[in-house]
Length: 127
Image (cartoon, rainbow, N blue to C red):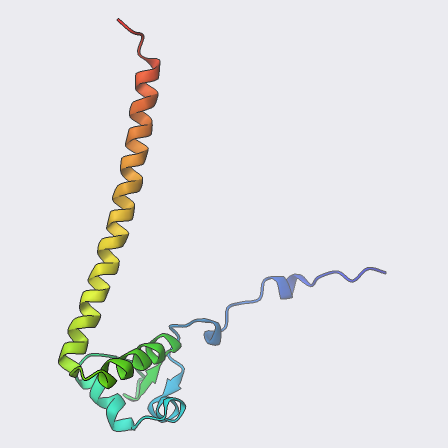
């Protein structure tokens, strides 16, 4: 008798642990994972370099995405950058990503318009 896949398993709901932006980790957990001081993580939040979400009680909760960002910031600090400079770098990197996305959207739109124009030229009889 063949084994059928369970529809329940096929429609498995995404768990918070599957979401890289789910705020799951406390300051203490992140500090232990990355071998950092909790005060350093609080300083990153104070300087708005890495701003974890807060629980209703005001405790910081970090996502996997934010933990990766902390790791990147630690590398930049190791290169001698200040937290103010790092915040600026992160802002500029975000701006570059936004501009690249816009450029890609604009290029796609241009290709679509050129294709429509070629289609119209093909339907116009020569004079």
